[in-house]
Amino acid sequence: MAQTKKGKALERLRKALGEMPELKQFRPDSPSFEKWQRDTRVAITSTFGSDSRHIGEFEAVRYFPSSAYQFSSSVYQSAPDRQNAYTRGLESAAAILESMIHEINEYWEDESEASQSSDNHKGEQITTKEVFVVHGRDEGAREKIARFLERLELKPVVLHEQPNEGRTIIEKFEDFARVGFAVVLLTPDDIGRLQDGTGESRPRARQNVIFEFGYFIGKLGREHVCALVQGDLERPSDYDGVLYIPLDDSDGWKMSLVQELKNAGYDIDANRVFAT
Picture: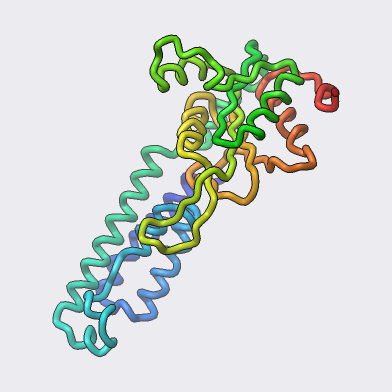
């Protein structure tokens, strides 16, 4: 039986964790430790992505005394606390790996469960015409998507266009999120990088967009959420399995979006894509 993505991820991290007791007999500059560190780095990156907080936490672990980073290597060679620092580093790394394993066990959905959920909805006709449009600050992109959905005879739900009626923002959001599909506009509205100042600043979507993106994945399932990406921006590393469609000037995204809506159960006349 083929191993699931979740099973492969657990196997990789458990292997790295299981090799750690043997590392105590080595030094942090030994080839054996360096190989383990390199292999584990690859395992974490393959599991969570190169831009994830997980790889950052692993990279932050130190295996030398602090003096080793301030003076020459000869200092830590003779320092009495060298072994203690190495042991503490291994313990920290083990705790991080255990936390990752727990996260996968607790929060990753088994593919068999996801497939069963998808099969339960496959072929069902969507009765609502409403499609929620998640957007950031780019009003032009928002209007382009909303008007295109109207051309398909669907009803785009744009939150700020709906009446408040005394509700808080989250109450209003929950009330209008009762739809069959969500289109998420990932536009480069913000800039972000690591807090310590390292790494390159990259454009990213607004935080409210990322929150609502995750909300609809949990509420509707991945097959009922489509992300339209404008430009080269940072994508959420934990949202694997979601379809990302480039919001290009050639309008190739239109047919891709129509296909996703049809797959989700919406009755759409594709000829309306080209209607004027």
